Amino acid sequence: MYDFLVNLVGNNIVAFFIAAALPLFLFILPYALLAVLAERKVSAHMQDRLGPMRTGYHGILQTVADILKLIQKEDLRASSTDKSLFNFAPYLVFMGSFAAFAVLPFSSFFIGSSIDVGLFYFLAISSLVVAGILMGGWSSNNKYSLLGAMRSVSQIISYEIPTAVVVLTMVMITGSLNLHTISDQQTAFFWNWNILGGTLPGIAKFLLIPLMLGAFIIIFISTLAEVNRTPFDIPEAESELVAGFFTEYSGMRFAMFFLAEYANMLAVSFLITILFFGGYHSPLGYLGNTLGVEWLVPIEQFFWFASKGLIFVLIQMWLRWTLPRLRVDQLMTVCWKYLIPYSIAILLLVGLVTLI
Amino acid sequence: MKQYFKNTFDALYTVLVGMRITFKHLFVPSVTIQYPEVKPQMPERARNRLFVNMDDCIGCDQCSRACPVNCITIETVKATPDDSPGETSQGKKKALWVTKFDIDIAKCCFCSLCVYPCPTECINMTKVYEFSEFERDNLIYNFATLTMDEVTDKQKKFEEFTAQKEAEKLAAAKAKAEKAKQDAAKKDDKPESKPE
Image (cartoon, rainbow over all chains, first blue to last red; front, side, top):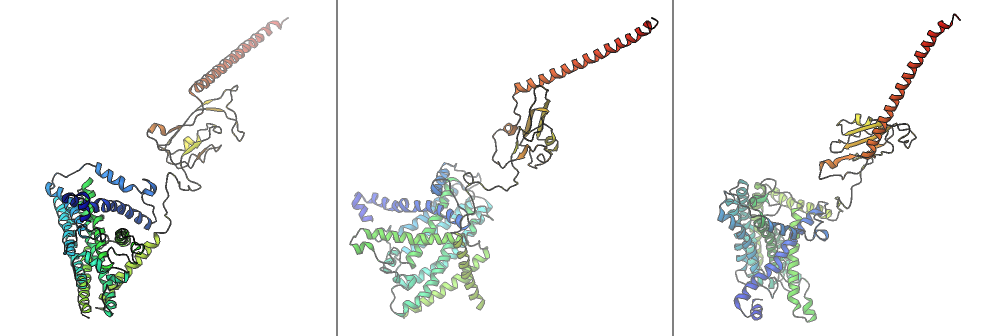
């Protein structure tokens, strides 16, 4: 993609900026707008309501109107906040969640950066969000903000352990940290996906299936907790802490936290897709290859990648409107007493299976 | 250890049960309605805005007296024989011109107590519930059908009529007095003529 852009505009720096901005403006921002709407509609229908119905046909333009409203709002800041940290925190959160998209292979043609430490980079950069949240909570000088931020930090740091262990398991199987390589290993048909044992030969593949299923469930739960979604939304528990770490924020800064949350949801969904569900690869082969139309293949790949990711986002929403919030002690119990032992057991068993 | 695995299984299983329920509800028709376009069905005996059918009102003031919050104000003028207000739909003769029939709906407590005493069943509760206003004065409903000119006209007529009646009465009294006087005079005369 980058080379293509360099050829197109004939300038390295311009091509670089276009390549960096394309996924943001073409995909992630429209996605965030649609996801907020989808969340509201899904929640409404799950509760036998209708949700937004006034703006546009069945409320399609509701989030656009909301964003316009948030842009117009005054940028309020309480007098006793730590000004510089307070102003910088939303940007940091936004940056952390959007920078994670740099290493995700949207298709074989379009990868922001195909670096060999992709998974490592992903985990590291999405942890930047924690710093932003703590910054925002601390600088707000508000008890609810600080409580929310501290809960958030303890939660994200705890749940990073099972995530990291499962990622380690996947690295053991695939032998690569490069997300593009991991995706390409699961090419062709859906039985090559890692959730179904990947491309391991013989009996090992079948032994791997239950382990992969467990690993998938663990990483799904732990990433759900990492993006602060219900049932793990104690950092912004609206019935306890007003709005958690962004209580004091208004207008566009609030919107940035909001967008970052949805971008984070998508990023972890993409990570699960790449690790377990074949990344951008089609489950049933490509129409472009069958018809001999080469340029259609990347578009199909993008379609499969986006739809797999969005399905996981929808499952996250579905869970949100199904489950009540966990208590803080329950949250820690789930992580330390259940997810971590299971993930370590899976790590060891997968190690044994790969020896066969 | 057994409990540990049971907990794990329970957690996953109950989550799936909950997810199944929410998924089912995704396809249940919504219970909410789109209010201004679709209106809720009112109960048969719903009590909302008051309405007075002035054709039937005889100005008896019973609703006003029944009202616990005094939101009904009625003023009447007696009708003169030559200018009758007509009859109600049930054939009852009206004797009063209702010059003022104001209901302050802002005060109204929708108790429906004014409806029961009405002898001609002309005041009743309708099913209209959307009558908010920007000005509080607009919530005072004037039901009287007479214009200001007509009201002064009726008052004048009544005054003239009473004045006339008074005059007649006075005249009658005078005549009576005169007659009595004459009679007395005649009586006085009689004994004089008796000796004749």
